[in-house]
Image (cartoon, rainbow, N blue to C red):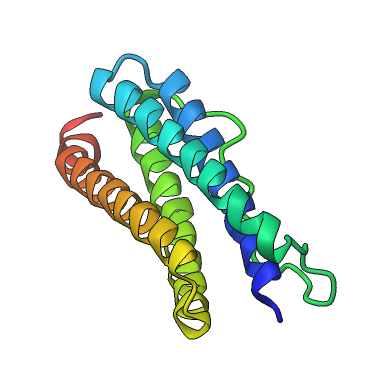
Length: 153
């Protein structure tokens, strides 16, 4: 069974996303909505990892031993500055959240095959929050892009 490999990917993805949200919140404190919503979403990702911990206890968490990492999400080591930097940071967050979302989707497929109701309950909660995060990131980028890309010098 390779589910533990994906549980490890999911845990790492949620950790990376939470850290990235915190970095963006720190770097863009001059935008209150970005700052506070990124802190809220980092807390959601931390909660997802806590919920996932019980599942990992049952199935184990195996890092990819025989599958080399082809795409490794580094997260955001340091936020960029200025309006364009914020837009690029939001885009990076979107990519990380998308990776997390698709990983939840694949784990959900396995949970359905296993008929694991406890895992499906965790997934339902976390999948919903990730979809809301993606919607906010999309909305915020759409709102910011015209002014940043066209109106600013």
